[in-house]
Amino acid sequence: MKNIGFIGLGHMGAPMAKNLLAAGFAVRVFDIVPEVVAPLVAGGAIAVDSVAAATQDADVVFTMLQTGEQVRNVCLGEQGIFANAKKSLLYIDCSSIDITVAHELHAYAHEKNIAMLDAPVSGGVSSAAAGTLTIMVGGRAADFQRAQNLFEKLGKKIIHAGAPGNGQAAKICNNLILGISMLAVSEGFSLAEKLGLDAKVFFDISNNASGQCWAMTNYCPVPGILPHAPASHDYQPGFTSHMMLKDLKLAQTAAASVNAAAPMGTQAAALYTQFINQGNAGVDFSGIIKLFQ
Ligand code: NAD
Picture (cartoon, rainbow, N blue to C red):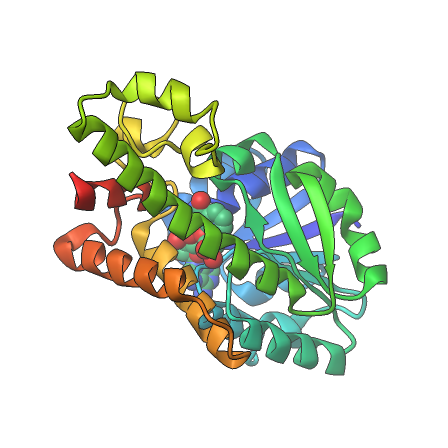
């Protein structure tokens, strides 16, 4: 597998495509926003002007888009991935999207003899840049094996979650935990401050005590604690609040589909909606701490 098409060069897609380039693959890149393409071209990528052009002759096509609707649009139709795929194409969707759309696209791909994996990622922009993402993969075991040499360039923990759609199921449940735990960390740090604790001192305590979690250790929402965290850069994303609400809504839909109780997720979605309605859709999701201050 030499020729890769990469569609969607945003916060996550750009550094992922860059790592594939650095590993020696030929990468054709496409995004509807031309400005995000130029830095990749400077790094050796070939810019193309359509989904079809990124797909024709590609051995593997990646998508890293925001929503299921966007992924469906680039897959289907005359100009889409499936209509322009060569026979042996392996299609890998790394976006975080609805399980139902993932199932629908797996079915279309299967009909056309295209191998497909749903392979959403976790770790954020810094892990995407470092090639240390966690990648959770749904699809056939043989296709998962076929993608190993690519996943190894993008992530450090690559797990086959099982059948088609299971990668998205894992991602949705993971981000449900993340959305809730970011709120818990925000609530805890805000209360600590009001109780007179120094934020750095409290970080030192809780980060080494039972309150420790990823949202705190790697993404603390208090400015000045972690130099790389969005909180220390005026909450520039990162991972926007809009995207976090998208994932919390995906969790609600998934929970309803199997009659599962998800009351914390419901509350988290309500708080993110409130935050976004105050004009914060594009603010990093860790900015939710402002609701408590
Ligand atoms: P983003 O908005 O930064 O990037 C998406 C890119 O897709 C944009 O550049 C956009 O122009 C492009 N795009 C949209 N429609 C297109 C089309 N039809 N053809 C070509 N390009 C198109 O989003 P992101 O933060 O990179 O997130 C991408 C996905 O990864 C989302 O599903 C998100 O939930 C998930 N994710 C994000 C993070 C994070 O920290 N940002 C972490 C893990 C997972």
